[in-house]
Length: 255
Image (tube, rainbow, N blue to C red; front, side, top):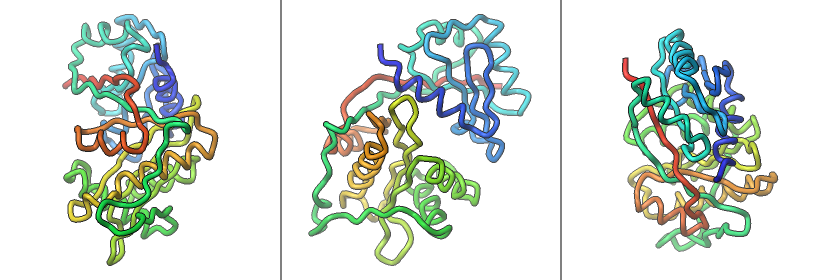
């Protein structure tokens, strides 16, 4: 049974500004946003919640006017999913995650058809963070709107032991980027890998992913993990050394 990813998720949520422990769960509340993709819960590895524990968890979300939502690796706490289903939670998605270790990492030499290496940079100025937030919003089809709070969260990630990397667009701004959380329990989550449509196919995603993973390994992480959105992105990640590690379950409770 792999519990490193689940143990990481617990530690990661406990770093949130208003984190709470409820029964066998930790809830990572962030008062700067009402997004359910930021405000969610996860069980401690091996948790065996009672129906009362789940009711208390739901109440913690309702007190803040938020949708009860969880993300977790089900094999790390097999008793959790049945307890949530009894309470009316529904499955949003089941995602496979990929894992890379220092020995597996393969740094790309250049972008396809670019004639040279892709130059990956670390953001420095507020304008850099804003450009990355705007570009990632567009890259993900406007799933979340760019905002000062989003740019500030990127900066907090970088200044809190994680990392943000991007590739500058020829005319300025951001062509593509991603972020990686601060390591916990020996691993770190790489997320938000996005490239603007007009710059896809140039090796940007692979370069940013490999650079972030290498950065975390340089800081002592034993592994880096991520989720992928389709077979195309999976192939990109596999080219730089990521391999299947397990699955994560996403569940939520409608009003």
